[in-house]
Length: 59
Image (cartoon, rainbow, N blue to C red):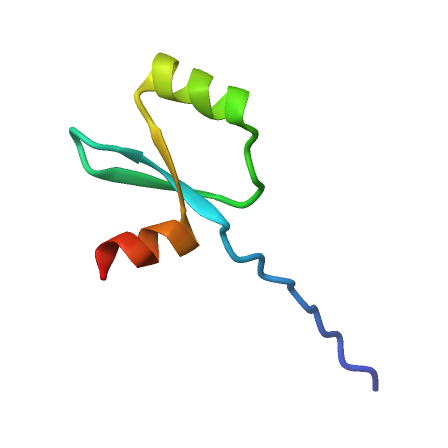
């Protein structure tokens, strides 16, 4: 009869948050404004790095 199909839209991350002492990375799927980045940096010690900037710095 009818086939049931599910289409999943996979969203690519736009940046990541990195904790330098432990080298842990968290993917970010939505851009974060500057104030939120500052508060995340101060409160949790996580550095916000966009993928296009990260690719340039690694080369």
